[in-house]
Length: 247
Image (cartoon, rainbow, N blue to C red; front, side):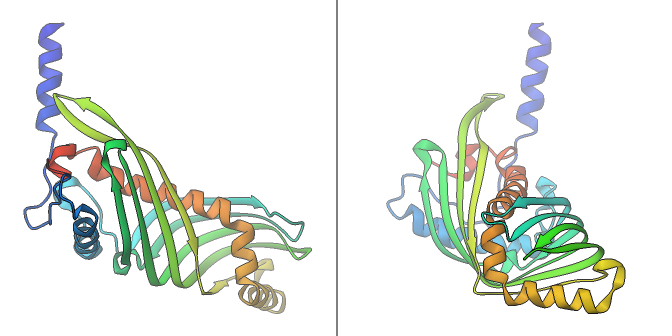
C-alpha cells in the first residue's frame, strides 16, 4: 500500500506543469496585482487565439469549439418558451476580447473580471422548438448568431486542493453575466424550409433581440459559464497554484 501511494504521488508530481516562460507572471503579494493580471490575461487571450497551449493539451480559443449546448428556458413572461440544442458549435471572438477589469481575491480563491467583445459570433447545427410571441417555432439546420459589443462579467470561485504535495486551485463555479448592444441571428430551414415563415420569425428575433436575450439570460449565462469553466479548468487543474500566482 505504501509503495502504491508513493507511485501515485510520483505520477501526480510528473503531471504538474508550468506556464510558458513568455507568459507574464503576477506575484500574488504585488500591490499592483490586479493591474498585472489585467495585462497578463490580455496577452494570454491573444496567444491562445490560434495556437492554444499544446503543452497543456489546451485547444485554440479561436474559434472555441463546443460539442453541444442546450438552452432550455421558459421566459419570465408568457411571450417566450424555448428549447434550443446546438451541436458542433464554434464560438468566434473571445480571443479578441478586451480586458476591462480584473480583481483577484486569492485568499478566497476567487477571480472576478469584465471583458468587452466587439463581435462575438456563434455558428452551429441547431434544433429549435418553442414559442415566440405565441408563434410556434420549429426547425432544424444551420444557424449563426452574432452579438455586437458584448460585455461579460466573469466570476470564478475555486478552492485549494493538494495533489502530490502541490497545491492547486480547483474551480468550483464560473458565473457569467452578459449584455450586448446589438444582435443579428439567422436560422436556416425554420418550419421545414418555409421561406415566408422563416424570414418572418428571423426578422422578429432580430427586431426584438434585447427582449429575447433578457428572457433567455439565465440559461444562456449558465451555459456560457460551463463552457468557460471547462476551458479554464484545463490550466488550473494541471498547473500548481504557486506557478500561476507566485508568492
